[in-house]
Length: 177
Length: 202
Image (cartoon, rainbow over all chains, first blue to last red; front, side, top):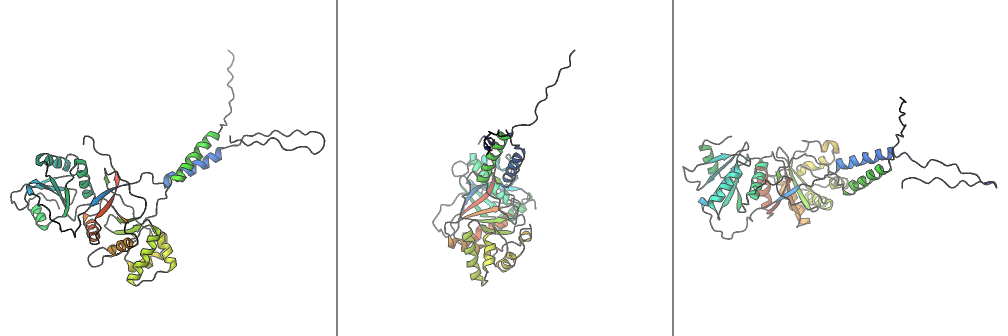
């Protein structure tokens, strides 16, 4: 296929038939292969093979003033990503002084377990409220949004951590600065 | 015992087949290649199980690096140039054609509009050195990110906002970005993440 036919041609000018010299038709392909692989390597390294994925985040319309039914605090799990990869959570009315505040991390046995437990306990009207603190890392928040997808918690909201809540966290003695 | 004569074999291989394969692969990579754009920051995005792929065109990408610096960019070169013109007009800065041409090829940048002219005239190597660009201001006093996104949306209202944040950056920056974009009624964001497999048993 890749061999070049170099036979034929070279007809004698003078009467007598002149034998064309049989040349070897083999070409050394090695440098060509080298070049080929060099270019392959180049293209492989400069290509972004795996396209990143996107996570869609829909925030509520700020101008939308339509009435919504209030969500009972007893059926709400508040999840507060804090600094140092810690996440705090409580279930209930934040005004309650004796409300227990839990602290955990982002591993499978951490917040995921907490969410699943509360989801099973509360049942239908379960809502997760994510109140990320300023010092939480972006990764933490994405992890939490991811947990929502993993645990199938479709009803969740993202709000800013209110100063009263942060105050409460600090008072609980579990807060790690 | 008679000595066994080792047959001399030819060491020359037929490279034709190998060459075919090499060029087949080369063709494949050349056709599928999309050059990695030159960016002023390297960002490690967090991973998620989200599988949706970003659409290829008409995106505004807001990049947030580790320190929380904000970079703005769009993939559409026409919109890029038009946005620059609109921003220049608004702030009373005239950009020359040469500067617009450089901007056309700038994938993303992070600088206040006042420093943009100087940035465009800086050597590309220096310009894309990590940490060179100061980041785009996005606070209540001077919210240029808002203006840039707004200007780009004026050109194409259907443009999508992709946030490419470094996992280690503070959530505070994200809050600012989301907050300022919600002010112009952008409520849908796409967070760029790496792939992660969904844990089993769910």
